[in-house]
Length: 578
Image 1 (cartoon, rainbow, N blue to C red):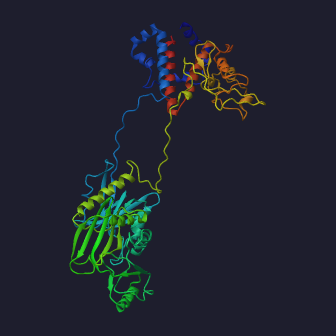
Image 2: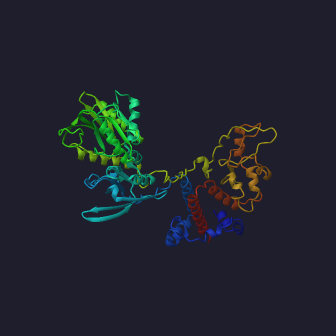
Image 3: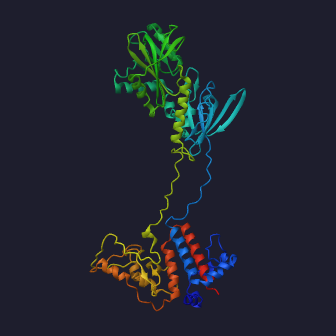
């Protein structure tokens, strides 16, 4: 111990120290100083005297504790940080497009997305909305509604939309397809999808999808009514048979439908189509016994039968009797087939007519804007609310945004893997076995194999006290004044190290031709002869720099290890300063 004390107080020791070694000792003490730091010694003079009474135990205890902290940092053995404060999620805004007769707020009261995010309901009609959609900014909706005689103006960015109103109707002069385009432009998810809502703005366009299902399933499984489409009045010369039903343009609730009994009435209707400047369809009149409606809300199915009491040929006009009937497999096939059009319909209904001769005819399909009927209206609205919450939970991630091409996901950084034993380098006092060569022995008859250091290879210092890593011989890590050490440890000349074909120093050393791996392992274990220019102070300095460089990790880990080494140096300076 006295020998080390004399060596550390020698002037040659200070001259051979790396750059910045002594300046680190002048830095102010940090909050994580070691137990033997000068700051702790000034606070507790009694333990300081006890430490000087046994300098050997204090030195090695400080050294072992510092190396323990250094070895625990890259291997992930440090204590995990404390639990962070919970992040309060902003409420998700649900825009319900429906008239004021239905208050959708009560159906979403107390419901949360993923059980933790609140839902704020904004309800308005298409006529009360305006918007502006951006490529990267999403969609900003302006709402002007009347609430209890008071005009309410509000602007917000919705996260989800429930469409319960028709976006286009020729009979009422309402055309809100531009709003549907704007909502789709902003990349907003909806029930039903905005793509399907826009496609449902033309009944002949929807009927073309029924024709595809008809050709796919056949007339027995999918009995579709016979219909003829006319883009204008010019081709409407006559009908194959009478009576026929003429439908003008795109309308709802029985509007725009006319029953034509003979050819003279048909010609009069043709002139009305010319004045309307729109398309028209004709289909055979079916003397119905009752109407059938099969609806699907998510995974819930219901079937209703509606019989006219007033005697009107339109069952939805005048007085009618409504009753719920059993859900058959035939009805389920109809609504399931129709729910697959336009990318999928979460809410839809199929309307059919049952004639007096006992045959069924499918005449129409409706989307999420369908009117609710029967005694289970409240249950159906709650089913729609639960469906919307389920869709929001699937599309909206807690703490994030809606995944869409307009707002791509932020690139996820790969977690830093803790270096394994092969990347940490040899620990002090623990001899490491020689690893197998990478790719097998390399034999080149023209050029001898280049010997390069491996992180797991070791050499003993001239005194035999600390094992040295070949990496300590690199120009960045060796101490000034020992240039011969780099050549002796690496075993290569500067010319060989600069060749493009030479392997890197981090690769394993290939075996020499004519020698086995065991023989080379024995040679690597032999201590090297003492170097004439390497004293014991340099050996200790090189050992510390080697252990610090061999376990180098991420920048945060380097700072922690640098702080540990700095505290260790302060401990040495405080022990041998007197």
